[in-house]
Amino acid sequence: MSDKGQLVADSSYLRYLPGVLAKSGDGFLARYLRIFEKLLSGLDDQTLDGRRGIQELLAAGVVGNLFYSRFSFLFPKSDHDFIPPISGLPTAEQDAILALFDSYIGVPARSDPLAGYVASPLAGGGGWQADFMAWLNEFLDWLASWVNLVLDHGWTLDKKRLVIAEIMALYRLRGTAQGMSMLLNLVLDLPLSVHCYTPPRSPPVMGPLSINVLNPTPPSIMVNKDAGTANTFTLNCAYLPGAPLVSGYAPWLFLLQVVLPAYGDAQKILDTAGAQQVQTLLAQLTTLVEAVKPAASRYQLQILGGMCLLPDPYRPQLNLNAVLGTKTPTL
Image 1 (spheres, rainbow, N blue to C red):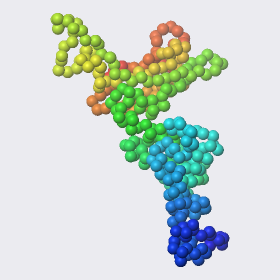
Image 2 (image 1 turned 90 degrees about the vertical axis):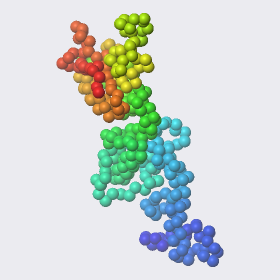
Image 3 (image 1 turned 180 degrees about the vertical axis):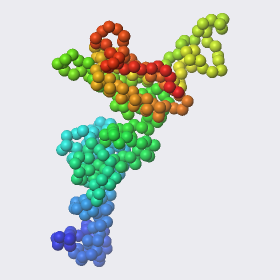
Image 4 (image 1 turned 120 degrees about the horizontal axis):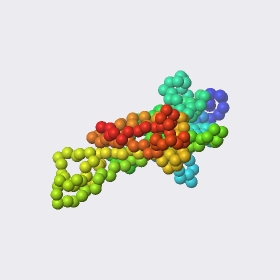
């Protein structure tokens, strides 16, 4: 009998016992087996706060998919998105997905609402959503640690899931221009839309900003009978800047091209807000590249579509919206 005085149904596991023991309504044994039925098969009641049984978790694919940040068991099989979104959805849809997730996990309410809590855009004002989001952020931190990744707590839930899902592929491309490009696009949310100048009383205009990562092409090798002729290849014991290379490229050097909107459309000149966006991005870019570039490699930063010193009111101005860059290598 339950705490509320209501009769509790006998466990269906009684049918697996010898006939002499499988007597319904005999009290202790019939209800004791419900514990194992709840844990293994699952029962549609509030025992153990509604947690699912092992059989239910296996049937829903939770056990096999919980450790892949896509969380496929939350979405219909017809959804072929790489990382189906959770954050940013309408409140009702978002809560429905989180409630389904919580029904498999059964996160208990925290006695201290702030204990272990990690701020998240999805946490809302409290309640079970805040408790579950605190657990989910901690779980993603733990999941990321298995692939040697430290998550930025400023990222959204979906950004964390996406980085975890892609980081192993990026590790395999480490040290290549392709890998560096993929990592910058992933972490910095590129391409980025930035504010551009518009005449007064005109609708705001946004322009695309992207970053190209290249291994710069060195000068061609010229063959001459006289080694003293200019640009003739000479094998030196150390590399000299600007000299030809037998390999055809410098594998230890990355050229980072920040492509501003004006590079593709001369009318899309950064306004004050856009210039601030770019300055913030450049600071993030240099910090990130310093952290992830391979040892003994260096990089050059090049800005395309920046300032043009012409008497044109639509061109960037030094004291307003110009972004100055340098091509000096960083060791």
